[in-house]
Amino acid sequence: MPEFVTYVGKLPYGPATVEYLGDLLRRHWEQTGARCGRRVLGWWDQVVMWLRSMHDNTRVVDLARDNGIGRSTAYRLLDETTEVVAAAAPALASALLAAKIAGHEHVLVDGTVVRTDRIGEPGPTKGVDLWWSGKHRAHGGNIQVIAAPDGHPIWCSEVRPGREHDITCARAIGLPEALDEMWNCEADTCCPVRRSTLADLGYEAEAAFTTPTKKPRAQSLTADQRWNNRLVACLRAPGERANALLKNFKALRRVTRHPSKITALARAALVLVHHLTDRQV
Image (cartoon, rainbow, N blue to C red):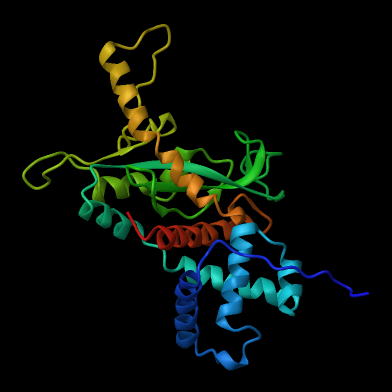
């Protein structure tokens, strides 16, 4: 009796995707002086293994066994591929410049928490782990995502502890200042259109974000305020699509490694989304 039962699996990606990622990997090997013939896996097998991890969050022990390598080697190759692909993600300035060229009048900002296994890392609050999100009642890391008006993700930030609110994360990475400097503007002779950044009430404390008007206690909103809130809500609704596109990769639904790995995983997912949709903004 054979020890294992074998089967054939298919990934929803064509050879062009593997070749695109393989080009990134080969250029990295050339820059670092790695000898392709002396590597335990070729670029095709390494990319396919990484795509299995991203798409299905396949267990590393299974990936290692299927490729005839050790588990520690599989971790090393997966991390290498993730870092190489993530390095191709656009910087904030490049993403906003592309949005300007595309003629967008507004972009959408929203945060999402990527869940992780429990990390017992002490935070500023006694008895509460650093990566514990009280809102989601789970451990995870918060990333900020900027999207085009139709919800297509164009940039994502480095990861912040899940205990931090969206506005705290945005301030920590300097996002309000960057948007004011490189994106937000009033219509005048230098800037023919008014550009703004739409966000939910979680960002209301920062003037860089256009948010709905919060209802005052024991008061009612005016008709103009209610209309403005309805308009902002309609324009901001597609922003949820950006987080959904990134989390379409199961590797971002629950990370079993240290939360600091989320930064590279999210940016690698962004590069994949841009390649598969053949658009950046």
